[in-house]
Length: 337
Ligand SMILES: [Zn+2]
Image (cartoon, rainbow, N blue to C red; front, side, top):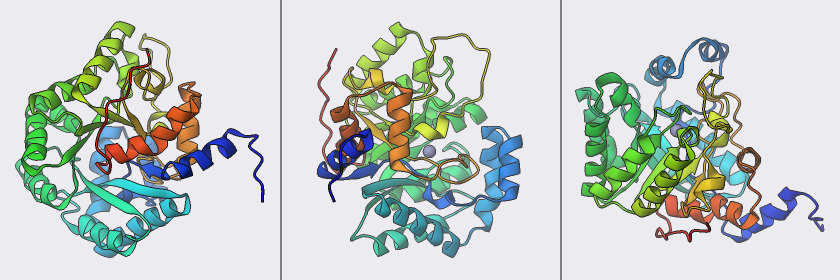
């Protein structure tokens, strides 16, 4: 059957396929498909940070079989869309212990002929608390990519700097890449991407560090943003955008540059920063509305950032993702402006 290319989707999807297929660079498969009336009520009444703790019970009660079912559902959902590679974070902490990663490794083995899977350790409890640190160290050996959430240690202890040192030091020692959740809250008081770049340079990890989200970048002034893009490029830092996950940032009365609550792809790419795409949470307490649809994510990114450069969008959906997962070596992106 001939497909008439009269929609953007009909134009772009064959290009994505020809470029090696979709790469979903960010997910939390171990918590996906866990919606329930109780979870929805929590969603309506809790802040993000309260949710981090409220999730504990769900995790404690999940068995290896529960986790295996969630990983399998996610992997099959990705395969059905033509995704060829996926990175998912996995909770390896005092609640999930090693049950989720054991299940993940088993599920990865089952689907290995259809999907390349990389694991990163989610550090929902930070890396400063001794019990959390113990599980971070165990996790660091089991995963492919060192995961991070420095905000947690900043919130609990005011020790983001120390957390970064532990994260970057571990990555360097083990020869692994870093994926760090940064600048999530769309607030000009966040400077986490900048801090990540400085630490990347300090530890000599250029081309090996990837930020996840970077929403708050767009809340800063134009001058700050331009300086930051230059620094990101110097540090060889890439950024993963997960458009659905943060488009629901609550309204505030803060004054700032007008923008949608998303990674500023329209500025990052011309400035020479490689951007990849991910679904992040799917059908769980954090993001109940996401169905894990790659095309939906790309549509939201392109429209929300008013970015219509098809070749760049195809790179974001494919090759940049492979670089972010370490499946292809990092190459600096030419600066367009
Ligand atoms: Zn995430």
